[in-house]
Amino acid sequence: AAAERLVQSARQAAHANARLGHVMATEREAHRAAVALAGRRLSYLSADANARLLFAAQPPRHAPAAGVSFGALMLPALPSGLPTHWLSRESTQSLRRWCEEEEVPLAALRCVVGRVVAVDGPTTVGPGEGGRGSTEANPYNLAEGDSYFVVHAEMVLPHRWVVM
Image (tube, rainbow, N blue to C red; front, side, top):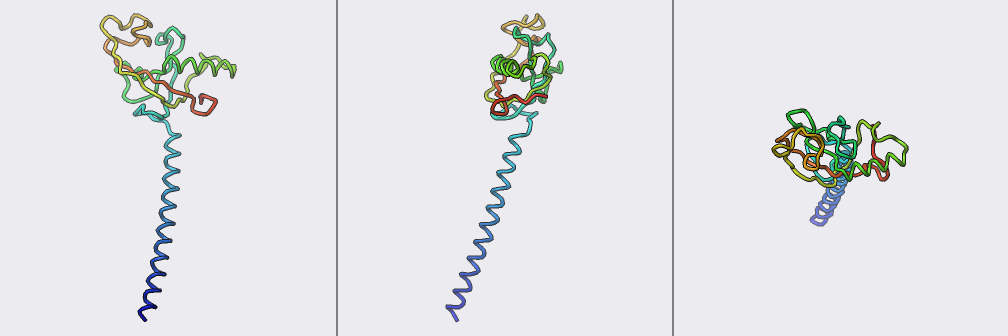
């Protein structure tokens, strides 16, 4: 009788372990799916590494010498409504090369999605540097006292920028 109870108890424990293993595997798969989905979502609140940001083309008066500029659509924005995060010169050059390969005029792009590699800043526009056009000290022609970040981003897909 005691041996029978031990065998029955061992069977119950084996069944409980099997159920627990199944539940844990299901939760692990659900977590992987959630992480994959989060990696495809756009971020509007932070520019952490690997976040995907939507960069919108900005008016020509905010373009550095390269001729175009893209600002991330994020909250909060500057008091003027301009973005606080700007696509770096190097990332814009990468986008320019992609456009040349795809025979798409860079100036025709309205929005692109990039994955954040690094963020420099904040940089504050100093006294006498605001509103004088694009300069080395103020490449995005922002108002005096505005603080901004420069975002180094890369193509979202292995060989392409996502263009909208």
